[in-house]
Amino acid sequence: MKLITLLTDFGLSDSFVGIMKGVIYGICPDANIVDLTHDIPPQSVMAGALALERAVPYFPPGTVHVAVVDPGVGTPRSPLAARIGTQYVVGPDNGLFTCLYKRAEKNGEMLEVVQLNQPQYWLAEISKVFHGRDIFAPVGAHLASGVPLSLLGSPLTDFKRLNFPQARREGYTWFCQVIAIDHFGTLQLNLSMADLQQAEVKQVCVAGEKINGLCATFGERPAGELMTLPDSSGHLSIAVVNGSAAGRLNVTVGEEVQVELKN
Image (cartoon, rainbow, N blue to C red; front, top):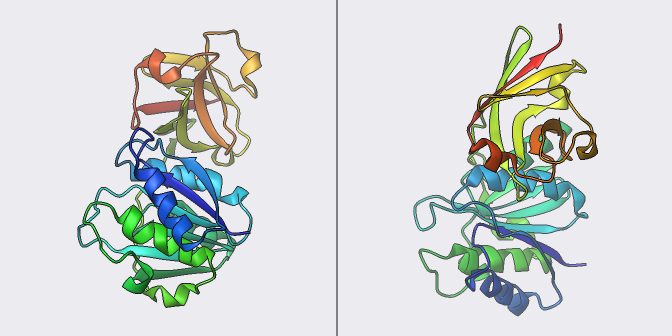
């Protein structure tokens, strides 16, 4: 199966995503294309990296992930492709694949990265503002068609990584922040259940509100109430039952949050 996923910040009101699919089908007509999302906030490389971290592990070996969140398009930033574990990624060298690099290194998996510099695998004309169409889509299609990664470029070892904000603990309090907000307005924190090491949460303080304890499901609180619970990726999150925590609290990515533990 020739499986290619697409992740962008393009939205769907314009034709950009459809054009990329047309390029892919022109090179690899039997490709199966899955849209991960095209609603990454514009230019938010960190949001794209987190979305890839959540999604990529659920795809089969050999999947090619083409990701374009590329505020530096047309600048000297490099285009790249990589084999990470048993899967492949194609996109800009701007830190978009940071979480995938980190996971592969932690698990001792293969990590082979190349700088794309073989234009015979690109479109004939290259725009300075649409590398998703002219470089990343065709390279992804060639990878899915069986072209070896080594033919697409030269080894790249100093690829870019994002510096994610790190939660810190002082006594019985974790100081963390909102790193993503989903479609429902749920706030994802840069604090995981693994970080807590089975410590019990006393309360969570955010935007002047205090939320008692930690829940396991949305059904544990009545509609309209703020709550804290682990999300599907194991991070702590703040939600409103049947509502939007982001809207209720009027917060954005970067908002500081305190998680107080029981003594």
